[in-house]
Length: 120
Figure 1: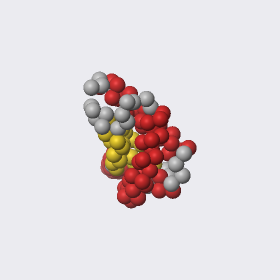
Figure 2: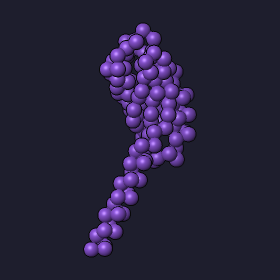
Figure 3: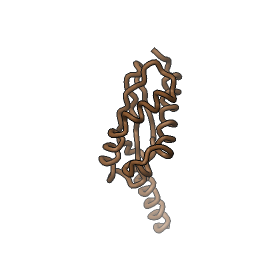
């Protein structure tokens, strides 16, 4: 079993390579303006959970995840040729609501600051 540091390096490399492929090689219109927020690889290197987000928020999440699922074979083959592993993990795609949640929290905090200014 690989160490935690090696798993993190593999996950970081997968995230970097998928991001590059989305920019340069994949022309699916469903996959425009998305970002890979995180990748987690399990200890057995059987699965890589890829977390994605988009500028528009969750309104396109089903469309984006469907596009990634349809491109998963191509992505896995390309990644396997770029990253030297004995067996390359299967890719599983998940929607990451973290950027949307962070934006919502920022708006709430800005509203609270504004109310505090008005009260003074």
